[in-house]
Image 1 (cartoon, one colour):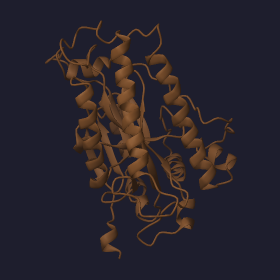
Image 2 (spheres, helix red, strand yellow; image 1 turned 90 degrees about the vertical axis):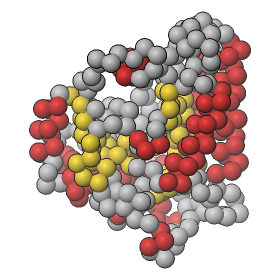
Image 3 (tube, helix red, strand yellow; image 1 turned 30 degrees about the vertical axis):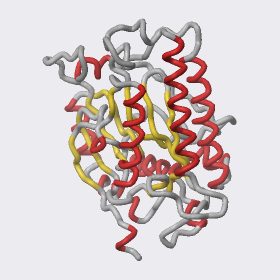
Image 4 (cartoon, helix red, strand yellow; image 1 turned 180 degrees about the vertical axis):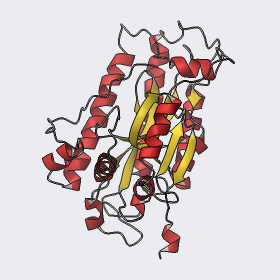
Length: 325
């Protein structure tokens, strides 16, 4: 697996708490504007760091996902079986967000024809990673331990609705994701008020962690950084820019890398101009916001999940705004 750091880059130290999500919430006094600022700082700082790395003179090429290389692409190994079993609670994006990602993926594909794209039906937001890289039997034991609790956790978004806004491409040398930040009262719609945004995505993750801990399960999540993202593309060939996908020298051409970063930044400018809330409070364009649990509740899922696979154990109850108006 390509080595990716999960460092909190949100700008200030976060107190250590028994529930790791309480630290940021407490540091921000539960204020959604401050929580949004931490998420914003994290993703912008990370993009700046990654831009410098990709355009740096010592850039050695993309960080290929060794498992994805064997599963899909020109170096596919038909005999390979992914041994990494996981257990998660995923948020599934509503159709309007999938439509936006479809457009973004098309733009990325124009610039990088051999980029691996996450299929739209497999897109997911990892609300909580209970365990990863375990054996099938190890995951089965955790599923049994959560039988009495998983439904309540997966249905939690019916009554605790965290809104995400301001889509932006986040990227590094291994993958690209569409990231969001928690809303803080901007352009609320469907009868929602600014007060409703006091329950943020970070609160949702905190609640999921607490419920799992109360169930006696030790959560094995790899990261608790302030990020709400859906992976939409990965690198599984040395060259994604056309021609021989195995020719790594193409990627070392600084002109190619500059063009790639420029395309990403153009997409981000477009997203900000078209899909972010405006100061006058007009409704946000479809795809520019979503409430976790919209259309589908949390997806309690197990198996070889890394690229959107696996099997659903229980899909939480979702909601549609049209049913409530």
